[in-house]
Image 1: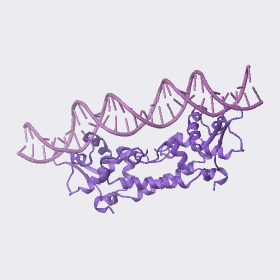
Image 2: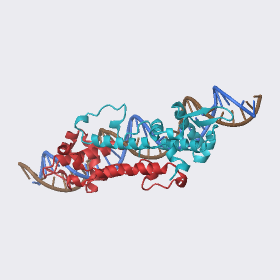
Image 3: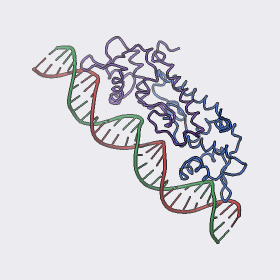
Image 4: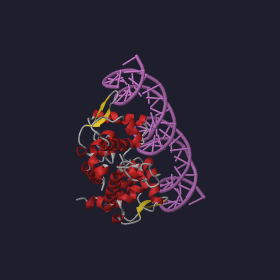
Length: 137
Length: 137
DNA sequence: TATTTACCTACCTTTACGGTTGGTAATTAG
DNA sequence: CTAATTACCAACCGTAAAGGTAGGTAAATA
């Protein structure tokens, strides 16, 4: 398994924000209810998205969250990278990874590279807009 | 991350067996040395492959391991499925998984399905023979 | 009979995931 | 000014898996 619930939830939250946007801010509580995610858990998922400027959050009454861009401007890969860290299928390909000693002679590395490319290309090609209700085939 | 060292090692072992085959049996120790894997750890990786009939193992002096088919008859997906269990990118798509409550309304499920198909199609299309030295581009 | 080999069981340490508890800080409505 | 509403933050916990080690037993052959 590769994508944890954190990533899945983050994606669903982003879609929820896109679908239910009326220009104002949407309270965490509302999202949690609609998406059937515990309020306390969702509380731990949103801050990184704010920090990365994917969404905006304001305190106090009438506050909540809002997208900072148009839905079609969010690549899925971008969102998942934030919550999941690295999407590489093997540790050998992760960003900060120390190069494997077998690197030069490894017969499997090309396989993993190709797979990695495949995954990224796909997740780069899909946006939040593609996953919204009214865009559903 | 998605593929653990067990899967990576299993693959390298299979390739090693294919490359160094002379018709006889190859001792675990030799593979471990060549592949730079601890003997004790490799010992835990091979039994499942024997059980699944991907390789054959014989006891005693002169014993060891041997492939049961030709290298081009091993799909990568088959080997990884044995050591890794399930290759699905999200738990929702794993075989024995209880269907998610949001299943019907989930906007992200189609994304995961498509990604899953992509991964499987690729790993189905590559064989051990494709990863061997003399076949390397 | 001794040696070589596969095979098996149990354990250990570290990491992560999924989640809860119990708050604090900012903003606004009254 | 106060109370309500909201985002935000830090610490903890239980479970499971990953990666690996230790110490054996069983089969086959020289």
